[in-house]
Length: 309
Ligand SMILES: [Zn+2]
Image (cartoon, rainbow, N blue to C red; front, side):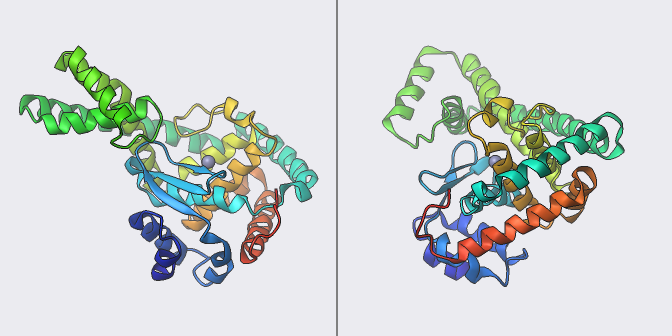
């Protein structure tokens, strides 16, 4: 599968393709590769300097180099898969099921153990890991200053600028100009503080999320992001959840986010988390997702000759 994928995705970064191949090989798609083959060549997957995301305009998945993690890639692949879902055909069914799921969620949010368990666990672990990762980062920065290792500081400053401006500027003129401007006008102390505030803390949050997902039960951040999407971001304030504004952009935004999280959990075999989503939102919800997942696969098996959305 890996060879096939590498051949199809020639314009992609090979280490991300390799990761996708291994996700697919270990998932329930391992023997259904022919289903996705017809359309996967339209996709480009690249390593990014900041934030993982999927662009449906350009059919590109960007995987954040600081979050080089299977479940994150599987989530973005879920966004790509969603393009093959004919949302309009099922809008009424989805609305019905989501309002049932919303009801179940709010009931249990008040007095259910399971939601409470996941929220507490995520809070506690995130706090713990963020502190740990910030300390690791401070040590790295401090050692670089003490040892006058300006290369390290320079590289971190580049990452900070990329994050600060939220763009994928490679070693372009823009990046060089900003680098020079910052270095020429500030003391080392100020530069170090700029790096810590504008990159170190963000990086610590990303790394903490990856650590959280690797704890048992696996995939907690995706489970919480899915639950969060049910109520369009109103209940959770974790750094890995979308804010309510994100969901205002289109009608099916929240459902797309649920689907991406469902795919992420499914492709990375987070069985316990999926089961608990059924326990929280009802098994009809899981059955619906399973049905839609299969519809998407059927649609992916055909070369798209008409727009589905
Ligand atoms: Zn997403």
